[in-house]
Length: 379
Image (cartoon, rainbow, N blue to C red):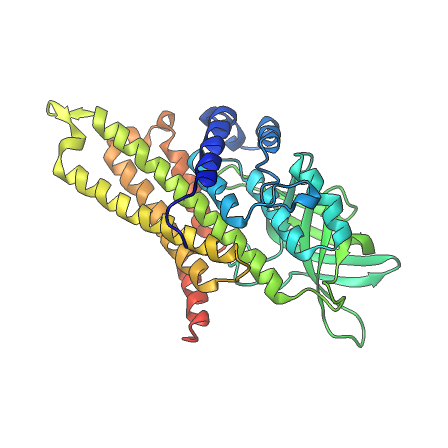
């Protein structure tokens, strides 16, 4: 991979930073994080659609920009810096999943609407605490004109504000082998029961019970062969989501470092800035080294996944590195801020909460180490 960004990527980075700075200030982040908030980042989604970000990695025939997953990762890094609402991430992940798993008719239905900013969506296709576990929690039984879906999605992100959610299920047909399918379910569907779950980040997290939810044949994908989705394709989608999340975490950690450096350069103790003390400089240096490692590991993972590889080894390494670097950066930042680091008005806690949530989502460092262990046949 090339470690130096080309001009197009630099332009995308600058454009993303400008749009996010205008449409996603910290006041919006605070508003969305309020318990039981009904706010929605509509202006942000509209602006991202207008500049082409929502359709960035969508093929041109569906109204997208035709860029690769790596360019989308550039946006994720900038979005992580400003704590972009997760509905943006889940909608973009939905587009990636549709591009890989859906039928041509389903792509024509969903991808143009997504690129134009008319669609809010989510994906519930793997274990939310272990992206390496792609076994469905739903079952699908045949019904006239479609399938009936039953089961539980224990931690569905943004299900309550998504127009449609992509789910996976295993078929249950008498005297036939199980098949892996994906279905597009609207949150207004009969039998879709979402119970809100509280969490530290203020995200819209739900436990969803599906009871005989009907999915028509047009809303179900059985894979190109009609014999079920390929586990390799679903694995690629899951790894793409993890790799992009790592880019988000790298951006968030970089923002924490920048805020900390600015603070210790201004805050004085004993008549001089605390940034002039060697102890503080050592902490900042350690933060920088860890975050640079996280950035490179995340970019490496996205680069390989963008080329169609599952790249489980690279994704596992990136997840381990980014989990620890982001979390450690926020802890060190609180230490260097002193008492001010625990005052809510400084906003530092918002990055700390996001770091903890993203550390757990898709798998902790220990779980990611398990992916690497299996990939290297060390299990």
